[in-house]
Length: 436
Image (cartoon, rainbow, N blue to C red; front, side, top):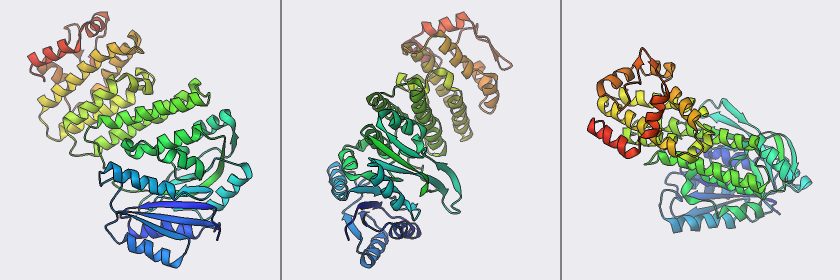
């Protein structure tokens, strides 16, 4: 046998049925000239026996064992050694990756290899289906526009048109030399964001991309897969900002910094912040009010985050999430004064710190304040008793600000008051009123 492709899988305690389905989907490919390297990532269940079983039956399968888990062992030198080992095993002309709980359609390797050879493609991408664990119903199909893309302009067109299908390294067949070049440089401190950084770099170095135009990969969406929450939830927001900035750098390299392309990146990472980060926080039942408020403040006051959102005009959905979390904290039997104080502290800090955002003008501030005090938002926090909070705690707002029957009077005096305070003055006033 003269393999043309290396298929790699990293296994850690994958349920037996899922692991067998993944392995067999590789071994049953219509294209047979491949080697399959399965990495035992410190398994503690019966996965090693299953891998050994298939290796004994099929000489295309080879098992490499790590003496610990790349992620959980917490040893940087060990992780680097393991990552280097994976890279060294990408030794055929092409390489692809299959997660140990996903599976290929039978013709993936054949379609991808033929497209790659015919067009001298740097990589080939197939569409993939997100399937819910259990019934395997298709939740969503992520597609890349079918075709062959040559040169910077067309590569950018492919990337922007199929970003969601191009953000991870599975569902693709790469020239091994290209993926080896960027594999070892993946930022180790970015968790599951490493795929995004690596794919950005690979796209930026690709001359030809080919798209199959049909589903060839099935991604199993497992229950509880979003249960890992960082100790500082604001770090989740920062990761999306880093990916956005890295993507901008690749667009610049490809002469693709047109506004419509920038907005594609904004929409992707804006959605990541709103859906992924807040979704995780809402499901994390042990998340403290301090952590939640820290994340909210980071999101609303950081100039880099504001750039991802493209200004305050795009914040209303995020504020809805803010209100949902405030209600969640209240309903979890936290004392209302503490939540009210945190709520007011965050709003005060938001208003103060927006003054330092060079991209923000007076109209942006006005728009943001109207979002905060929109009648619909006020009504949505009935359980939170927002109106009572303003009355009971005598929050640090001028008398001219009237909150009557869900209506707020916004005028120049109020805006002037916002711009006249600094964070030290706000903090002192809140402390004097025993709100913090």
